[in-house]
Image 1 (cartoon, rainbow, N blue to C red):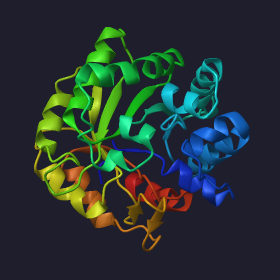
Image 2 (image 1 turned 180 degrees about the vertical axis):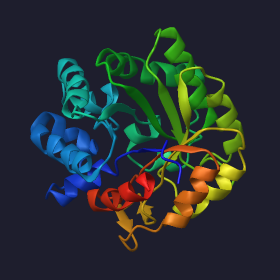
Image 3 (image 1 turned 90 degrees about the horizontal axis):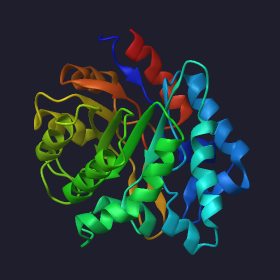
Image 4 (image 1 turned 180 degrees about the horizontal axis):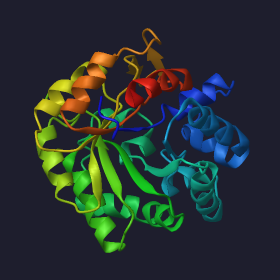
Length: 286
């Protein structure tokens, strides 16, 4: 197997739940940056100990509008974003600062639908301050995640240029079919958009059913991929629960196909626990 594949961590919220945390606010794991940051550090360590070489930070749900709406001050948001990167620093591991989509701020499952009805300029304004602060935190990578539509991806790419970013990044999309983003746009178009960027380490798929990954890759040839699908469960946005078997539903055979199709980073998203990453580590190293 190709040993040039880097192992990403799994679902941070999943690891936090393993540690006994209940994540039921609109800020999810981001709330712990202010109240119990030691739990985030401990969750990251579970993944580092399991063999992950890239740790994605707890900043996914932390936005200025979202945090201010629940009583945080601007200074507290600044501090939380900077802290999120520091908490993920371990020897031999790269830190990828997480930038979640506008839909995560809405906390209603919109990251699995897209089509927000916002202009590119409105989306740039939403992302600007957080992206700037996370660049300031000096991570190794920027993980722009669970993006459901091309308008938001274009907005973030323009912002990266406007902010003079020099940090390598990926943009990872949530997808609903074998060829489509959650918005209904083509994954092939998303891949072409991202792969034009010199600093892009690849185009990603995350928060997506594992069985869709292989056909999605086949729909966008000649790209480099960053893959961290869900464990295989389905998200109920009403009850805010994952439904289905907790066992990992992608196999060694799936991983071998993904690598053959251009995957350079592989890990897991929602429902993928440190124990699952520990199982993936020897597969990628063999």
